[in-house]
Length: 116
Length: 113
Image (tube, rainbow over all chains, first blue to last red; front, side):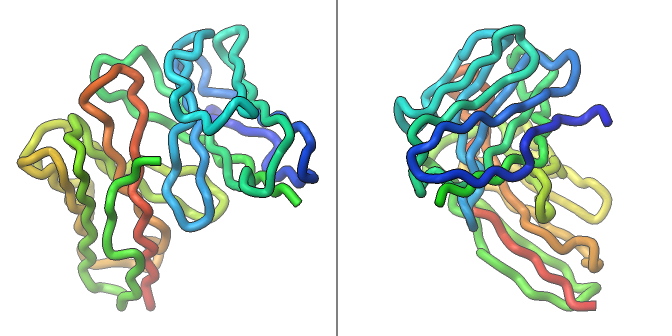
């Protein structure tokens, strides 16, 4: 399909381990967002990419979280030394172009991360 | 993190009934959005509002952007079973240029056939 895809769909890991979550945006979309959704809550912004650069990383909770988008397409969210509180659904969204007014963000199905 | 205040938290209604939910914020937004999320899926946009006071419809859905830019409501008329899901409001902040969205806590809607 032509939508945003995320892999894996589910990830179970142990406390202290390192994880990588991948997002494939819609082809041609230059803006890419990561959000985190805890159980029973709405998504919370983590980081925004415009092209290859992280234009806003103000939502990253601490320095264990890092994200890259080296070629301006696929993005990887990396979490070091995972903690049980990192358990959540991590959503990726992409948008067609640089924002001057609202452009719809298309969301992927998310990766459900469980830290034991 | 910052979130909008969305109510009610959940609703259980009879098929055919109308539904209303709303969001308020202490911050001013230049865009309000309403999303629906099904289990195991990401949010899907239902309605986008761009101007204070704007009233917009999408089929059986109607939403309004509050005149103060700090609130919005969503109405669903003549509910059907496929309306079941979680509905989120979201605002785009007026300052900055990231387009990041601030979401409400969600309203879980259940429809009894």
